Image (tube, rainbow, N blue to C red):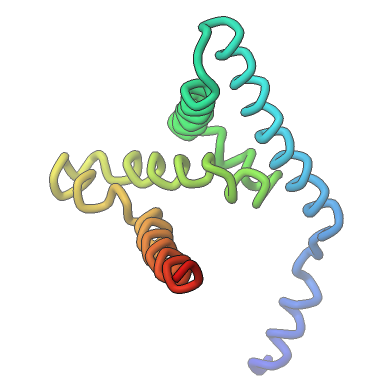
Length: 145
């Protein structure tokens, strides 16, 4: 069997993804996280008399904590395989990437394990977020002059 025959066989036997179903599930999960954040924000405002900014911060922290907890308990990966970008794109994906890197390298020690690998997956998000924010700030200054 040559390389082309092998690739054809692999292509034929690889299961096809139902993209419409994946899009719908990701949309539903992303929307659920957004609604959950709003409900938590309202609850924090009503129950603890927090301002909107404080309640928003508290709800975001709770969602991040839950994503890290679910990663540590080991079932966040199963949810990601089902809901894909519905869980990866929001803040939960960033929290998951940091927590999973921390769990993967904890056995190597605090410095060479956690310290050097903590932001291994999330580092590019931070870098390009800062760079794009800087560029947008310059554009805003130029437009407003």
